[in-house]
Amino acid sequence: MGDVTCGFPGYEHFCYELGTLLSMHPPHFIYIQDTETTRTTSTVVDTVLRDLSKAPPSSNPFKICYARVDSISCFTSRLFYETIINALVGWEPSWEDGCGNWNADIDVRWNENMDTFLHGLRAAHLHLCRRNGISPSSADKGKGKEGGHQDVRLVVVVERAERLKESLPELLVPLARLAELSRLDLSVIFISQVGWEDIRPPLGASPDPYYMDIQSPSKDDIARNLISNFSMLSESFPSNNILTNPYHPALKSLYTHFITVLCDVCFPFTHNPQELQYIAAARWPGFSKPLVDEHKRKMAEHNHDEESDVDMDGDEPAGGLEFAPPSDDIRMRLNRLFNPTLTTALEALLPRLTNAADWALANEPPAGLLSLPRTHTLQASSAPGRDEAGMRALPRMSKFILLASFLASTNPPKSDVRMFGRGLDEKKRRRRVTKATGKTKGGGPAKVPQRLLGPAPFALDRMVAILGALLEENDVDSRLLAREFTIPGEYTDMEIGRVGIFSSVVELTSMRLLHRTSPTDRLDGPPMFKCAISYETVLTLAKQLDVALNDLLWDPV
Image: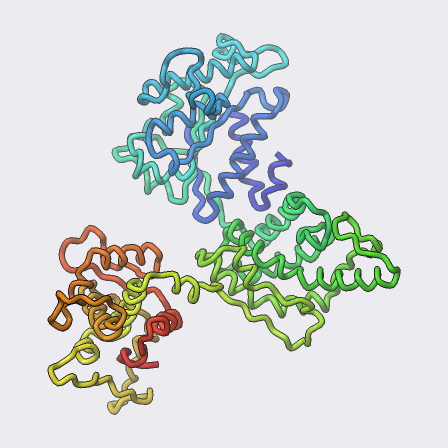
């Protein structure tokens, strides 16, 4: 198992335990729980099973054949059965053959129900025995031909097993007892983020599994895992020129230093190696760019002295100038320049406010960074163009809805009449008089403004009323002439009562610009929402709509 553990630092003991169990006498039901790095654990399990399936008879007397099934993609029992049977026998449906499933030359469907699925497992086991030169009679007795495998052992891996409780709860008990139902040498492995107690069927219908808990990876293990991916990333680039390949082998020592710094900054916030690899992919080209630019400048000077051209397409420079590793002083300078941008990248990429390519393009360092004064700093943007371009692409009515939502989340409900009400004498709005913060007359603490406490929930009816006031005050001039509306405010009442207003609220909620705080199945009372955009974003919207935002805030900024 040495080849398996070297690629997955921190999983050595898990690989050894799982490989030993599956090679010797595996339990019929194994439950693996990983609360943080489920995808990495699934990859490790697949690697262990792939190596065991290729093991010669001298090291493993059983021929292991396995199938992986995802509980999210296989949301029906038919898809679940088909995926397992086809993966065990290595069958891939093709369009030329009508996308048919494997049937062992028998006109029988294995995906009708659990009974036919069990017959399909036995047929697949018989097919695998014949393909590996094992007679069914010798397999039943545990004796194979001399120098070959004794029997075929089946392994079924169910990923994201917690989803079975919602989509296919009727399969939990049969899968836990699949070995005794099929009467085969078979083991079922569940991989889940939650414990077995959370998805266990009631009344003790399923047996207790063999538990395997995955501990959170340490910072050193994650760093070694990310550093080990450098060779694969270097081979994925078609060019071997350091000027166009950010993962050139000459940059491996600097990449090791970069990953160490990245883990020091981001490890307290996430322990997922794939998330950290995503952040590293966004920041590493910019981190190495100053050194590559400096090397390019030295190459130009070197080739100019020798009156030769730089071979930009070759694997090596024409002048033969090799890349010099950076000194400790340059590394410390790069740390001082790029460390603040790592936190910004984490805040933007971990919740996927933007993608790695756009973030890297927006935060690309200037050319000749090392030649600039040491006091120069980099200004990183967390979500490039999200406030400007993203908000500008919204429809005009959606912008008014966001503006009304922000006012409903910031202003107290009692202030709506004073801020948006219009009397017969058309009095001006009476905004709250702002006072300096400090202690009150009684000596108690002053009230903290709502904008510092965060957005407050508001009812949908209140937001629609504020929306009507905003449209009546700021959208009258942009409307088409409608002679059928003669009463003031009649056109606005019609606009805010349209179905499009409520569909826009649903769309903005799906875009996470609004958060729904009340349950969707609650029938009593209006739906409650909360604004999810910042003051800077609302200020951008107000400028686009030509609305004086500070005049509408109860506590102006």
